[in-house]
Image (tube, rainbow over the protein chains, first blue to last red):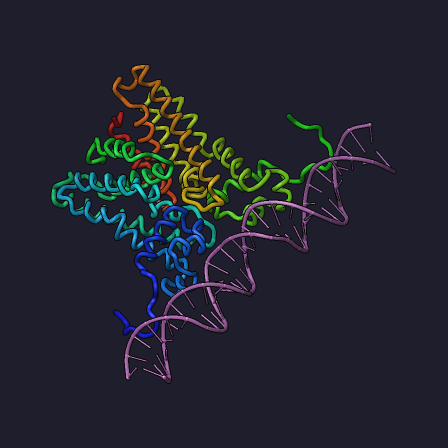
Amino acid sequence: MEKAQIGRPREFDAEEALQKAVVVFWERGYEGASLSDLTEAMGISRKSMYAAFGNKEELFRKALRRYSEGTVSYIVDALEAPTAREVAEAFLTGSVRANTRPGCPSGCLGVQGALAVGETGRVARDVLTEWRAGGQEHLRVRFQRAVAEGDLPAGADPDLIARYLMTIANGMAVQAAGGATREELLRVADAALLNWPPA
Amino acid sequence: MEKAQIGRPREFDAEEALQKAVVVFWERGYEGASLSDLTEAMGISRKSMYAAFGNKEELFRKALRRYSEGTVSYIVDALEAPTAREVAEAFLTGSVRANTRPGCPSGCLGVQGALAVGETGRVARDVLTEWRAGGQEHLRVRFQRAVAEGDLPAGADPDLIARYLMTIANGMAVQAAGGATREELLRVADAALLNWPPA
DNA sequence: GCACTTCTGCACCGATCGGTGCAGAAGGGT
DNA sequence: ACCCTTCTGCACCGATCGGTGCAGAAGTGC
């Protein structure tokens, strides 16, 4: 993978710069984040950004990937909880924590990054739609397994349960973007889990 | 209120044009909707738009007001339901219907109109944040009344119940923007109401 | 040291952004 | 008929958008 070192090496840390881009996209959304905003935060010139990441859309894709591996890696952990109930708990409390992390923008990049957009944001919007659907699909598969294992009743609908949880998580992202606190959202998560399974 | 008719009257129907603007903002968001997009859909020139509505921010405010009075007027109706449980049901099913109305953009203008934005969208974002908070406050007051009337148990927390319902509604807006169908979301609404009150 | 590659910063590209100035047309009220 | 106001369409404003061409600096392998 690593090509032989030929020519002048870049002066900045690409991972570090990408993390800065994540924050800008997270805070302003794809369309609201201008190249000037991005490169200024990343501490590099436009030319260096294009050489290292391709273009704005590619930068967004890579930022989302980094966001997935970092901020919202709780999802992967949640899926490994021993029972469906614990999966749901870990997923929702993880969402709350990610949406209200001190020092980070409020809400979720995957939700507010590009929800309704103009022509220029179509790709970013579709990327995020697919990203959210992917997360929901992981939940669905996990709950399907839980049904097979007898952890959930035979009549339970894995698709509905996954969508139910993802809907709550999406809603909490909107709430966080609007200023809701971690404590307020944790209470919502508790309320959402009062009846389990929800179908 | 009506100023005496002096000078040439405008050639277009302001209400009709405003409704077109609602759809464009709803579909593309505040920043994603350019003046060209808006005026083209409204069928009027830039100059006529500025004369009739002020500027883009004012147009957005007026579009949101019209949206409130039209598409999401179900909230007002829901608040008048006789019991807290029926209020919750009417609110959630109304949300689902509004988010998945054939011929209209998917999702909710109040959510996807301006969630994460750049400098130019700050005002629109704050307007929507306040708008969502206002809706939640109406629910809270209604549930507070329900507690006073004994319709909800004395220990119930109106603030939490209102936030819980608004979180679900917000989440369903995100789901609808991602392509969820009316039937799928109605099942989510049912699941969310399985335990009542949720706290 | 040399050749080669890739870096960086700056100026610049056409397109589009929100918003206006202007001129002329068109409808009042009297 | 007149005046006066407000309409409309078009061209245009400076600013900013995402993206590049260019020149020179700076590193690597030989």
